[in-house]
Every structure is written in C-alpha cells, then in structure tokens.
Length: 512
Image 1 (cartoon, rainbow, N blue to C red):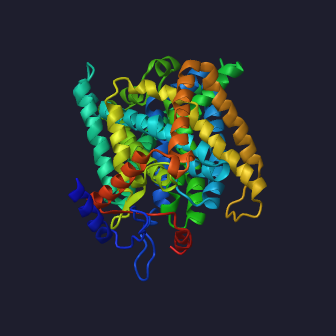
Image 2 (image 1 turned 60 degrees about the horizontal axis):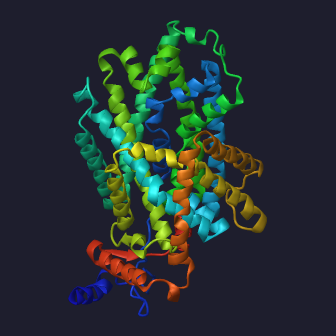
Image 3 (image 1 turned 90 degrees about the horizontal axis):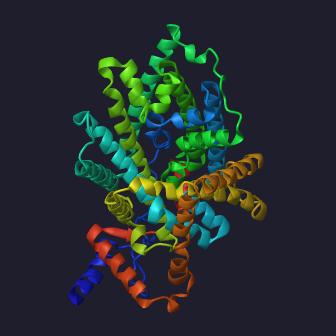
C-alpha cells in the first residue's frame, strides 16, 4: 500500500503537470505560463441546447400517460385549456431561469442558484436529495421504461422476464455513461438524433389526427366542454399532471459553463424550445382525442400504443419503438444534467473532491459520470423502484421555487449586478406563488410519501454538520485521508485533474 501511495504521488504531477499545491496533496488545474488551463469546454451549440431542453421535456409521458389531465378535467376542451395553462406557467419558470442562468454563469441549475442566493446549507440539502434519491431513481425508472418497451414485441401476451428487463436497462445506462465520458460532442449528438426521432414520431401522430379531422371525424369536439369539472381541487390535480409533463425545461441550466456564448444561446434556446413543446403537446392531445373515445383513453395504460393500434394498422410497431427512443433520449439528457450537478457540488466542497475531476484531454467530468452510473445501477437492483418516485413528487417544485425566490432576493440585495436578461418581477412572483401551491398539493394528497421524502432530505443535516460545517481541524481525520487518497488514485487511473470555476471562460464563450 505504501509503494502504491508513493507511485501515485510520483505519477500525479506527470498526469496533471499544471498541479501546484505543495501544502495540499490534491492537485488543481491552474494557469502556469504557457500551459493550457484545464476546464470544461464550451462545446454545446444553440441547436444542441434546444435538443437538450426539448429532448428532456418530451419524455415518455406524452406517449404513455397523458390521461391524468383528462381524468381530472372530465372534458376534452378543459383538458386542452389546462395543457395550455401548464405551458404558459412553464414558460414563466423558464424565463426566470434564463435570467438566473445569465446572471449566475455556473452549471448546476437550482443547486447553483440556491447556493448563490441562500448559502451552502439549503444548496447541500438539494444536492443530498438528488444524490440519495431523485437522480438515480428517476434514471432507473426511465431505463426500465425503455427496456420494457424494447422487449414488448417479443412478449406480446405476457410480462417480459424480470431479469431480462433489468439487464437491458443496465446496458442502456452503461452505454450512455460511456458515450458521455468519451466526449461532450458524442453525448450531444446522441441527444440531437433521438430528439429528432421523437419529434418525427409525434409529428406522425399529429398528422394522423389532422387527416381524421379533415375527413370529418371530429365528434369529440362537437361539445368540447361538456361535462367539465367545476371542482377547484380536480382542476388543480389536472394542472399538476400537466406540469409534470412539462418538467425538464431547466436542463440546459445544468451545463451553463459548456454553452457557447451563454448570454445569447441560453435564453434563445429556452425561447425556441418552450413554444415547440407546448404546441406539440396540444396537437398530440388533439390527435388522441380525435381517434380515441374518452373511455378508451381513461382505460389505457399507454395511450400512444392504444392510438397506434387504432389508427396505424400494420405500422403500429412504430409507437413502442418511439417510446423506447424517447426514453433513451430523456435518459441521456438526465445523465448529462445530473453529472454536472455532482461535478459542481464537488467543486464547491459539498461532495468529495474526486467528483470534480475532469479528463485532461476529453474535458469530460468522468468521475461524476461514473458515480452517476453507479448510483443508477444500484437503484436498478431495487425491486419496486417506481415507488421511490412518490417520495419526491413535491421536491422538484420546492427547489425550483427556491431558485426563483433567489432571483427576487438577488434583485433586492444586489440591484447593480450585471444581468444580461432582466425580467419584470411579475414573472418570478407569480411563479413562486404557483410553486408554493405545487408543493402543498402532494403534501395534502399524498402525505405519507411526502413526509418520507422530507425525512430523506433532512437526513442530510448531520452529514452537512460533520463534513462541511465543522472547521477542518474538528472534522473526522479519516474523511480527509479518504478524500485525499480517492482524489490522487482517480487522477492516476482516469487521467484527470481537479479544476475550479473559471470566470475567464465566460469571456471566451462570448467570442465563440
């Protein structure tokens, strides 16, 4: 072990020649003469950004379960109104994130904005919840959905084998982790391809609906608001279902430091993506309503598959394949955003230093990506991983709401701060009020699961106290030794360097 330690210490400066810290055994990438500074590269173009947002927003939900809105609204007309309201509300949040992303040019989205506005404790709790539950559980669910639809054709009359589905899901996850470790460009190309594929699938559904309407098959819209619910609680649940289908518009804010000219491309990508998704959602639901009656819609566990069976004839196989491709693209976007969240958290001192390492030649956060993949594989071993999703149904809106509240707070405390995008305060105030409502709804409607989710978040409090809040000399010594050893070892094994947030890259990005 001693020989290995000495070997690592000797090899470390060779692998990361820009490392200079004689008093600190961890190396950090720094500028030194003519040496190139190691940091994340700005390789995400405007089109890549649009595909990231659209690809993550349009997941399997619009294919599988759009019936939640219709079930609670009780009419076609009111359900379409609620889909439109959900789109407008999401635009409000996305516009707020456009200001936050250009004002605070850090990757990490809500984590970075909460950290900047309210300090380390709340930001750490957000990060802790993501690591322990949100990111790995959601990625496990997406990969399992992908695997289920992929093997569905081979088991048309029965459930597919449990082990086969889990192995395919694991293979899907591992392949995407490898792709994103290899190159940022590889990851964005995968995202572009699968975003185009899912858009083409949805366009096919929309075209079929238009043809049906043109041929006079529009009985569903003869009295579109007939039977509409007047219960505010039911309408709230319908809106809640719609908004979950719109979640994912913050994806690009997780990779702000890798966007070319972020002051232009970040808000522009958001401004282009949001109308696209809203219009596609509305037209897709119109197509569903034209082809299927309400009973068929409400009885179906996979509305798009039922639609395909009713309208596409011999080409009905396109829909299950489209759902699988949609899941694959959504999983890729989730991996990209989650790995950057862990990377930024480690760089800010809230996670082990080894997770803030990036490859010296590929400029990808390989340790953070591998850690993300490992957590996803662990959660694939949980038999009822879908149940875990219920534990954090409220937390997404809580953290996004805190981020937008941070926008208001920074306007008051730092009025002269440079803001390339500056909104009227009407937008963040409205969004914060609605977010509060969206946090309260699951607490009231699903109290037990929500309390379990709160308990999981609060379990990070003692961790924060011991590992972060306490001064270095009072922290357990074995934690520092373990952190140092892991950092040095991973540097050698993966050819990586530590890096810090480089404000110079902001100026570089503007010239690209």
